[in-house]
Image 1 (cartoon, helix red, strand yellow):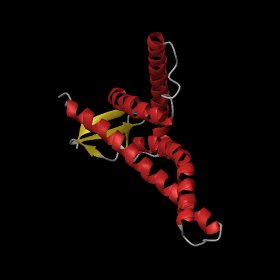
Image 2 (cartoon, rainbow, N blue to C red):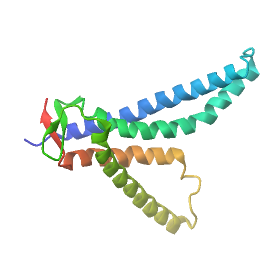
Image 3 (tube, helix red, strand yellow):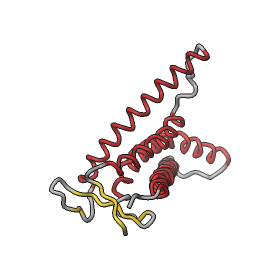
Image 4 (cartoon, rainbow, N blue to C red):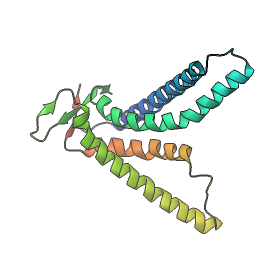
Length: 180
């Protein structure tokens, strides 16, 4: 029996929500802790308007770096998490080379899938950017320098990375989808 399209949509939604929420929580927590450690290290002075402004500046300065690291980590951990969740009454199972089901996949089991996903996602994003930049340049005569930044790259990862994730898991011979 073929899977319903809603399963793939829910799988994409699981991927997107897992990546987005956990990345934001982890990067915010690490940025807050960085601000707190610097505040304590500098003597834990009185909290006035200038102190809060300085702590806010430290938070905003450290957030992009922690966001990037958290995003990379969550892009790896989502592959482990998808094999422990039930999505629309289905479970995804990972099999080894001898066609034995891996009960609880470790990160070492997941890395091969992640590398394939990363390679395909990067190529799709690069191809999209080349086509987009080419079409934009043909119609306007200039390159959109302000459009290519970390926010737009995160947006492209969330769109194309999720599509590659869903299609990759559905086509992979090591992954099987079974009723829960």
